[in-house]
Image (cartoon, rainbow, N blue to C red):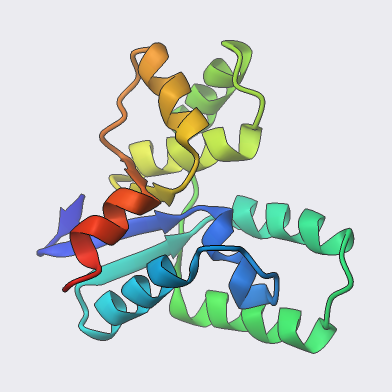
Amino acid sequence: MSSSGKLRLLLDTTYILPVLGVEVVGVERALETLWRLRKRREVEIYYSPFSLLEALWKLAKLDYDPSVVETGLSLVEEELVPADPTPRGYVKALELKRRGFRDLVDLLLYATALSRGLLLLTRDAQLLSFLADEREDTSVILLEEEFARRYAQR
């Protein structure tokens, strides 16, 4: 999805965690590509407060540096655009949860992308598979490997 030629990406929590000081294996290439595209003003990067909540759940189980977390949260708030689902998006996430997908946060991210005209950058192939099996619109899902293949050389 694009607005005036810009790629409009909603980040899965996977890409928020490193900003908060949590190591995520194999995410470097995608993050480098994101920041390069952002520097060139070719992408608008969105985040969901649900991702922040999910990241905080993860951080609560880890040994973390409060100053790194605070700096990371400030960076997210200052540099990225917040995005929530529409009311219809919330209902869509609930319906999909009822149909058998366990992770409500992932469904809320999907519903946000769907209802706001964004692409959800994720590495969650299970989410994509579930949505495809349920005959849902998967055009808003951009898997990390596809993102890297398409945009890393830009």
